[in-house]
Length: 128
Image (cartoon, rainbow, N blue to C red):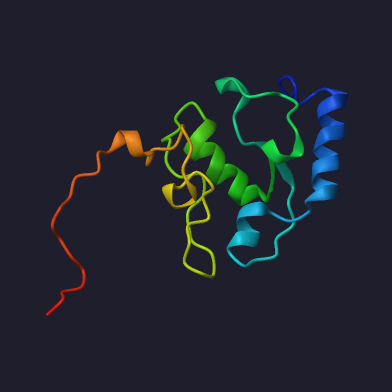
């Protein structure tokens, strides 16, 4: 049987409401794909102090592939704490909402306090 809170009627109602509100996979939509969502994921895992019944904006509708990718990267016992989602949108921007490009989050591996900004004096474009 599923663990708390997933076996409660409150979670089942919240899950169905989120899927009705956002029926497509969040990550796939950013990649330019139209994939039906089948899972509702907590942005901040319950096991790591997240609210079991958060507002819609703290939940993501995901397809099975993206849910498994996010869980392996961030939430599982062997989590590698990397990017939530791999890949880029049609404009070339990272789709992971925790990426530094989007402002980062405190639980992301690329947050600014983990790597000091030291000038490298390396330039991709020369002025000659």
